[in-house]
Image 1 (cartoon, helix red, strand yellow):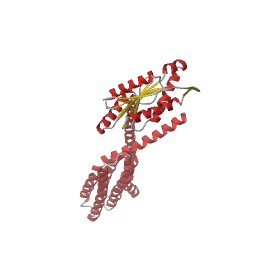
Image 2 (spheres, rainbow, N blue to C red):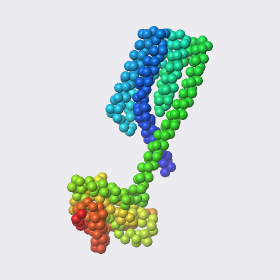
Image 3 (cartoon, rainbow, N blue to C red):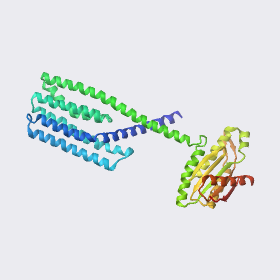
Image 4 (cartoon, one colour):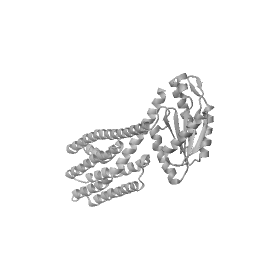
Length: 380
């Protein structure tokens, strides 16, 4: 049993991890759109700052590459908005997102390095400050997926950092060391942000799952697993409204375990619970997908059969009555034979009235000797 529980917990954990990953990707797509314009704007500002120092052709070529990469990314985001992938479908969009993120990041890192090589020290520092800003923005923007944040940061900042460290001049080496320290800080920051976002998403999913479980428990009979009385009326009203709109017949079947008090007195209440569970299991097997079944209280159950004529409902009830009588319940190695009395009513869409008619038919079945089906039509 413990092994089964651990396997179930492991599967549930894997499912939660996938849903959290999908949530993070949804977040990235929704919050990354403005980054396209920021990237182009920052590239324009850098070109303006270096226009009098670097080769114009070099700046224009680099700016063109930034614009092309941004346009490709723009079309990806536009297609995402058009298709609107939901739930786990978004996972198919992760690879295109990563590719269109790393390409412009590398254009920034390698392109600015090329510009720095052709520039004086002052302008190298100016260009390097732009890279630091872009790297910090990448970490804050893409930390939902840590490998994207780290990859974008490294693509932007690492080429220039390595180049400065290899130059050997004191000023440039100092800038390179400072850049390494900055990257370490960004790595730690991305770790904190990623964990915080993941924790929030996991908590949201767990709260939603807990809410669903609570709602399900509020509508489920704890002993049999069938709908409880409240859920039966809630689901039944929806079904009745549908049948009324579609002008379909609707039948109600009331089932009551015969001599149930005697079972409790002779075998004990635990055995009585086993008999009720056995009866509920048999009802579940007889249900069609469109039917509604619930425990109304004690040993009494009810079924709603949509698009079913009275004669058909009675035939279904008689087959169930015979099948149940031929299948005893088992409790601690003891077979407990039991029968049911069934009342069937049809015509009309008022559930309360239909239940009243079915209950009258059930009373007639008991009065006639039990272990039988009685049906009647009622005007509703």
